Image (cartoon, rainbow, N blue to C red):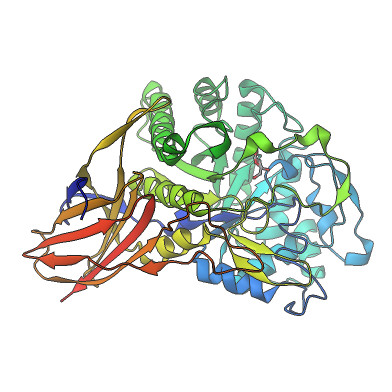
Length: 502
Ligand code: AHR
């Protein structure tokens, strides 16, 4: 038993919103080894007829990934999508200026959309609004979504795809506020371009749902003003505004790093307020949704910077190896996304394979699960139904960056038809935390399991040699007594507690 104690109450009457499966998205960028030797490796023993790695496809299904954003990221801002369609032998090799790489275009749009179908994920495509504009975005949409009888749709049919893809989710560029972006623009210029592109895309296909670029991070000097200006132009045409965040353990102490979700929570609230400010100015009842389409832990301070990369083919870029503390933070970020389910309806972890990957691969070799794979897969599997409003009381600790921070981060979901309840909880404290959950509003539940991601060594990682060094474990001690759930949350841990009808 521990001296540190937290409590919370769950009640099916207190709801945030339905769990939107689209928050369990990920991201595949033409960058380093995410595509090449990641999801695609012709000649690999596990490759299928297209060259798609079935071992990676299987792990992606196990993750429960819903949406996958493609092809970038910074890459999209100097990409010509036409290079990646048609006979492979005729596709040009280009210089990718985002990551100073040689892009062979062996893998392109049709391969990605084929991969999406085989894996069972929804594609979320990005158009290039760095070096290109309205026309090329419409050409791409016509190629994907028009049935036939036009230049681009007939070309798709000629390329062996008779049926349109009906892609719904589209990103209008990527991180256009960032000076590193090829085709970086001011908020005014981007806002006008995003509005005109969105107007044309919706005229072509009114079923599309469009994401305008918000800031590439909350610490950008233009944060806030960027969002407001972009939406002043694009408000009537777009459906979502994007958020991006990466949390870096190298630039703070462990307690601050473990509190990264505080930043994510404040960031989401600030963007929602800014979006609503624009709506209020227009006396509009339209509620632009939020798309957190890049998020993860990333030791970005260790990255040499794009300008220092030597041009290379499928380089080993940013192949971060994640430890247990990273997995706990990723788990807390997922909880935060759920807590904002009423407004945040798309999210993409960045990225799926190798680059900041949930999955790691070796060329010609195995694929394995990083530590951060586990909280993602378990949250995607068990978060069903509605998110409940969890009001917790817990001890706090002080951080320089965020002030007092609660030891506990928690979200619960309730699948009313099945009667299943899932509680996701992170103990950020460096000692165990005992948790009591008031279940008075739920007449008869039994404990189906308490799964944790934790380890005596929070620096433990999974490697090719030890791919299962860190795996989820069942944790003893949880019990329900007179409609009160009691559980022990180990120090620096992520938990999923499942309750089902008795
Ligand atoms: O995910 C890696 C990169 O991070 C993406 O290309 C970019 O959008 C972000 O800065």
